[in-house]
Length: 627
Image 1: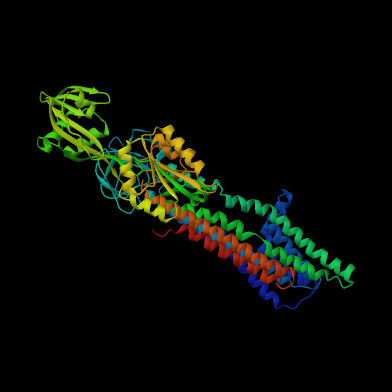
Image 2 (image 1 turned 30 degrees about the horizontal axis):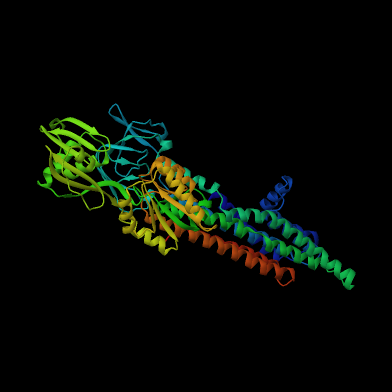
């Protein structure tokens, strides 16, 4: 509990004790008025001050104004002898209890989110002249080698230049399993080093590192209001003046009608009391507090699961998603090529792989890297001479003095080598040595292990259509789409073609349905920006894709998309529940108050009770069940 909350609790207790004690002191007149004003001002002076400030600033109609008018009116009624001062004090007392509870609940929610997102590093260890100096991460330039001891957070993105270790990435990705890293691996800030000592060469300034971007996204997400929040803001703007005018009408019109039309006693004090009760009941605290709190908690719960949502408006739109469009490479597949077989070989497989690896050893192409990974032995580049790269065909080089041709079927035709076709799906690398065909190597991208389950979960969640757009070959794209259960696939597309396809789908969908695009590459940025909801892979995704996206999946797991939709729908259900609860209870209580059935005490119990229930319900959005 904060210092401010403790002071409020003391004020509430003091006022409550004084109100009870004064009830047993039998005094009348001005003395009774004076002693009851002590607990009234003890518990309510800040409400009166805020109401006065609102009037001065011409922002009259808010909950403070309603409480001030209602309680001052109750005091006036008590002075006339028709009411009791304890009602005015009780209204202030229970209103402040509700405010204290709300403050504590919001504070606890913020603390939970802060704990979940406790990834901001305090320092970076920089070695200088044989000693280690702790610097502020903001002060560390790009290219600096920093030391990370076991148990410390990685402060800045970089590449491991010395050491091996396991990293705890749960604060960023929600993934509980540690990630093994070694020399040459990229590491991102916010992870915790678990086992070995690492030396990391920084590749970004702290302000552009992953941890800074994540914190900035979460901190600024509240500035983007959802339609529900905007509705509540507009609702409160017109609602408060309306109830004030209604209360005034309730206080004036019935007595005038009784006096002029019916010829009865006007009962001014009775209808004034009803009008004051009407004002207390009408206070819109539950709506004004619980709706933003629900979205705030939902964004916090999603962050804990490794899903970063850039604003409440995107969380609301995600709940309405009916179309999901995917990129292929790096999104549904790992974007890592692997050797999956050597076919039609006239030599030992290892010999075929050796010649292909040596011929490609000077290239940094993903295919070359996959060949070296499969070969698994040191490559002596001195054995390779006369390397010639033929664009769109492959490479011809001399390995140990023998002419080796490694490439596609066009290269084999160019070299007049009789080759054999491959029926398997993937990239085919033919290998010929001194004009003799040695066989071909099948290299293909690897589908992510959760990709198929992700598509199944989306269909189960009511997603009407899943589509895959890719620049890859038609045969490969269709094979991946069929294996995953994706409804529609478009292949061999340029970035501009992807935008056109998304625009076509946007034109086909129903008006209220939303279309989400999931991608990771630089070429996906235009499509991410064009879709209703852009979702980027945050771990391996490009900076351009992450900047253009509205939602970021931090561990590149497509299964997290189904979880994000589940979180958003739960959040929206809670919002609608709170709106229905608050308006429903208030409507009933307002009618009871207008007809004189509900008194001031019941009014404040109803108002505070609804607010407490709504806040408790809102906090549920912070907790996410596993799918």
